[in-house]
Structures are given as structure tokens and as C-alpha cells.
Length: 420
Image 1: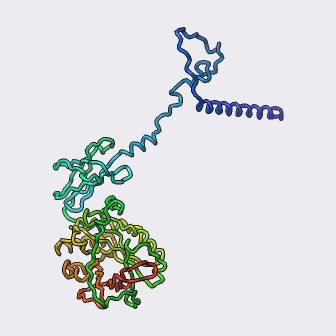
Image 2: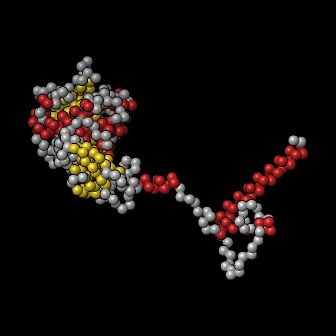
Image 3: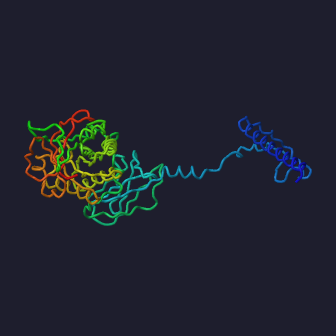
């Protein structure tokens, strides 16, 4: 191609680009401008003209290049399938149904697996009729069922899409001491509960004036450590580590004393991350208010769910104490309370963790068949220079009035004989 033709090609291309740009600017500017009035109606028949007479480009209808401006549907967009799907998923419900022992826990969840609250859901259980979510928490519990296969149906409710087919589930005859996979749906934060009424652990102190309140010196067979919860506030774990603390048992949560809600300790995540980052080995404990083995499995499952991201070098303990005399589990008989502790520990052990029981001397002697629990780590609370407890124990909490750099106020201190 010679230079003359090249120049002509370049100029032609530039002209086309300018023309297209001008047309785009014209259309965009006209979209924001008021629409011109529609042509007045006329009774005269339109004049017929041929394509050749009007010299209209092929494919164009009529000779008015701005006619699209009068078409009120021209700029209407088709339904966006992505938005339509999102809207549909926002109202789509499903059921998560589990059984621990001759029972069913039916949870109504959204498309993301989150519990749906604030609605009076109804479910239909074959052979038993309908059940209502009375407290509108998205959970319906059905107990005293015979073992076997059941079908659960979520009944229609305005504003939601419910499953077309019922959910099939097997009701277990006995507790299997296996962590419940969907337990996270039951774990609440303190924003969801009445904290003053629910978090009422009240340890029965067992001690005398010989109680040691300083961090003890470690030995070849013993390690010194602390246990903490939200009551200890924000902790400077570097200072705690430098002060000589060799391990920490951190409260992961508790069951509410009134409603039985499973609640995460608000400082758990900060405490365990801080301790691990500072090189302090950790274990955890959970304050129980379980009234039967089923609830004990739930509690253990909640702990397993909450610690799944962390490496524990010390046991997962069930903290069995009173709750001020009015706790839902305060009146348990010795046999039931022992079964609760054993169910918790068996579930923890079956998940691959070391399990343990925490209580004071009086509680072990009067409220538990401790001989059934000694295969787990026994953590004794007795505040005197030499414990009077005659049973076997691997950890000893010797004071609740300790003081350590990095923590404001009193802190519980313990000695571990676990060899870690």
C-alpha cells in the first residue's frame, strides 16, 4: 500500500471513530434529558413509501433516527438471572434435623445455613402431627420418640419457599457420644441472652488460712499455670508468659443457668489467640448446666466446634459446680451428674482430645461418683497449702486470689502434674 492510500485509510478510520463517539455522546446526553412529547395522534392514514424512495438503510424501520426515544420499553432491561436467583435464595428455607437419643432437634435455616428467627414455623412429623416453634428461635425440639426412621416436613409460611420434599432422619436409640456436626447453629453470644441471669457459676470454696496466693515455682514433675475467663478482662499475655506462667486453661463458654443456652465466653477467642501467640500452652473448660447426657453431648460438641482452629496441649474440662442454688442443674442427683460428666468426657475423647473434670473437694466427695471419672484428668480445686482430698488428681487449683503481671485483679492459679 502506497503512502497516499495509507493516509486515506487512516483518515477514514478516524472519521468512523469520531462518528461513533459522537453518536454515543448524543444518545447518552438524550437519556438524561426530558423526553420530547409524543407526536399528536392523527386520523390521516400514513403515507406509504418504499425503501428505495426514502433511501433508508437496510434494517432500519421508518426514517426517524430518534424514534427509539418515544418507545417507553426501549430501555427496559431483561430480568437479571443472578439478581433473581439471589432474591429467591434469600427466602428459600431448609431443615437441619439431628438426633442424639430418642429425640429430634429440627432447625430452620436459610440458604446460607443460618438459623431463621422471628417466625412461628410449623413442622409436621409423620405419625405425630404438627409442632410449632413457640419461641420463634428457628428450633423445634421433639423428645420421647421411639428409635427409627421419621419424615419431617416444614409447612408453608408466607414470604418463604419451603422444601418440596420432607426430610428423612433416623432417631437414635442411645447416645453415641459423637460430636454433633451442626451444633454451631445453637451457639450464642452474650448479646443474645440475659447475662446476669444466665452466667451464674458459683464455686463452693474449700480452703483455709494456709491458702497460697503466689505463683509457685515449677519443678521437674510439676508445671504452674492459671485459668482465665471474661472476668479477668483484657490480658497482656507476653507479660503473663514472662512472669513464669507455663500453661493456661481458658474458659470457652457456658450453658445458661436459666434457659440452657450454649454461650461462648466473649473473651475466649482473644484469650486463646493471645496465649498461643505468646507461647503459652493451653487447654479449655466449659461450665456445665446440662441436665442429662444429651445436653452433655451438646456441650462437648459446642466446645469441639469452638476449639477446632487451635492446638490444645492441655485437656478440655467440664466445670461442674453450682449456679447459685437456682441453676437448672443444681438439683441433679449424684448418678445423673456423674453421667453428665462422663458423657461430656467420652464425646471429647472420641473427637481426639484429652478430657477432664473440674470440681472442688466437696463436689467430688458429695455430688459425683468420682471413681467412674478417674480415667479422665481430675482437676481439684482446694485452697489450702496441702489438699485434704483423698482421691487421685492430676491438677490442683490452689488459689482463686492469685496475682500475676499482665492481669488486673485476682486470678486462679494451678499446678499440673501431667508432665507437660
